[in-house]
Amino acid sequence: VVRLLSRPVTPTPHTASIAGSRPAAPLWRRLLGAQESGLLAVILVVMVGLTVFGHFTPKNIPKRDGAGQIVRDPDSNRVLTVEVNRFLELNNIVQITTQASFIAVMAVGMTAVIILAGVDLAGGSMSALAALLGAMALKQFVPDSSVWVSVPLAVVICCGVGGVLGLVNGSLIVGLKVHPFIITLGTMTIYRGLVVVISGAHAISQLPESLQKGFFKFEAAGVYPMLTGIMIGVAVIGALVLSRTVFGRRVYAIGGNETAAKYAGVPVGRVKVMCYGLVGMLTGLSACMYIGYY
Image 1 (cartoon, one colour):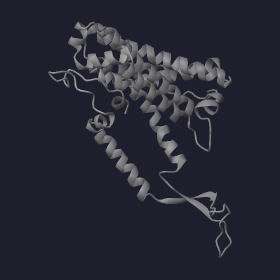
Image 2: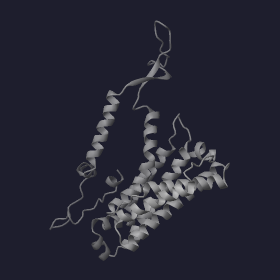
Image 3: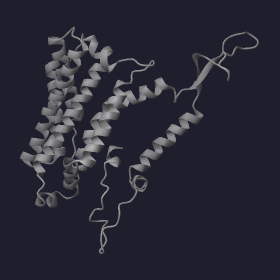
Image 4: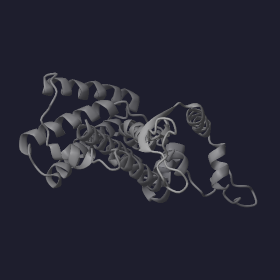
């Protein structure tokens, strides 16, 4: 979705005619013409099927008539309850988006790497190492702190660790001139090994309660919407960065033709390192969300 929304709106050399550049196609045509639109169509069909043919379950909310009066069963005088669709029920929707948010936040950074014609296999290992170090720091320094201390500290540590690990990946790729598949395959194993060695294969518990109930598992209307909100915010910012900034245009230029981008004055190496560092930071944010929720 981020990639679809961040595509260029100006004509490219491939769409320019001999007489001049044609106007850009409207957004709906570009969305329908993209190869990702098929996957989105399948998801929408599944959602519609679950909505239409899904089972209904009673919910403990009194049913009311048009005048606002509670409806009762005429035989037993029992208060009738409202039936809700299992799929469209608010708690189910938020639970689905919450489970997807950890991967979705990392996927925004991975989108930039894929547009860059790169790949990063170390995302899961970076997330695990960032979560481990963040949890250890919180338990050691602020075990009973308030939300104003625990949340900023967790975000800074997790995103900082993830950013450093991502910069290491990018620096090795650019410095050694080795394909990112090989580099990130190696660092994936290294980072995962560090997690096992540092933790001794034991879980880290007794984190500040404020980190969970005070922020990441803040309850509103019977659901925990914080992770869903973070996911949507990161996706919107990612789309804007890729479509409306110089950095985003450079990412597209390098992915389209790295040699041409280099001759056009684009700092290819620096953009690549920054891109992998961005992936690391978003991976760290996902790790922070994970330890804050679970």
